[in-house]
Every structure is written in structure tokens, then in C-alpha cells.
Length: 237
Image (cartoon, rainbow, N blue to C red; front, side):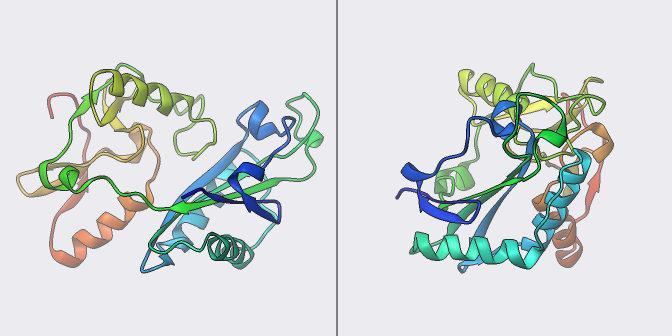
């Protein structure tokens, strides 16, 4: 089923959705995004996703001039137009907007807001039942002093290269190290390792995205009595 797309208030089919080639999100990757899904046709952890969207935007000095309720209404309108029978996937992108060929933020007085809605496609049942193959890749996670991984940035070259290396090796997902050789996260997800009944995940200071699911798993662990903790992890783990 094709996607339905919202671009600055206009909702169209994916074939008719357009953004200017002079948008700085296209020219320079200047923008942030969030990916959400529904359960029982309701957006899951919307408040947490919006909180992270605003934090990411703040880290690149990008103004987000709409309220949480306004964004929720825009997503809801787009989902209604998509008329998806089951669960939905929604991707929200905010860019610095259209401007001249310059890095000066003053050249882009108005942001661009894009919302992509399509049916949610989960991994096949076998992935949950039997597991999948992962590979530790040679692509190093961005140094926090360059493009900080805590920014959920539209510029995904680092992750794309990691996943492409994993795919070439026949893996489902790629695990990246940081500049110190510590494990950080995967190309599309945070990393957890279960050892002796404890769920371990690298600390944020290793240089990784503070994942919404990652955060939620700490909450779930407390509720069901499973120890979830941060720990520095390396290849041998």
C-alpha cells in the first residue's frame, strides 16, 4: 500500500509529495526526525518521541514552532487520509527549510515539516522465533564531538554505511563500535545483550542515541522484575 504524505499542511499521495531541492534538509541533511508506530491504532509513546524531537532540534539550533498537540493533529489527519486497516508507521521530519546555498541559518526563515504514514511492517515471525544474524561492522559510530549520535538527525550516512556493510556480510543488522572500540548501538536500533538473566546495554556516554524503546525497557524491567542496566560492552561480550 502506498504511503500518504503531509508536507507543510498539504496531504497527498507519495507520488505527489514534493520538497524543494533548495530545502536544507536535502542539501545538507539539516534536520531531525522521529519514527513512531501504532498499537491498537494509537501512536505508541508519542509524548516521549516529541520530547526527543525537540531535544534533537535544540542540539542543532533548529526552531520547532509548533506545539505537541498541533503535531499530533497533523499526524492524526495524515493517518486518517491513509485509511490503514491495521497498524501504521509514521515518520516525522523537521528540516531547516528552503534557502540559499549557504550554511547560515538566517537563510532559512521557515522550517519544513514532513509526515510520512504507511502500513507498519514488522519483521517476519521467524525473526522473533529463531533470531537473526548480526555482524560487528568496521564503520565507527560518529564521534560525539563531530555529529553527536544523541541527535536523531536526518543525515543518516553513518548508519547507512554500517547497515550496508552488514547486508553485504549476510547479516540482518550491524553493530557499531565507538572510537574507543566499545560497542555502542546498531544501525537501526539500540543494542541489548542478555547475560545471566540481566539485560545489558551500553551507557549513553559511549556515544549513542537515547532510544525510546531503550528507555521503555528500563521501565518494563522494573515492572516485571528483570534487571536492566548500563554496562560498557566490547566485542567479546
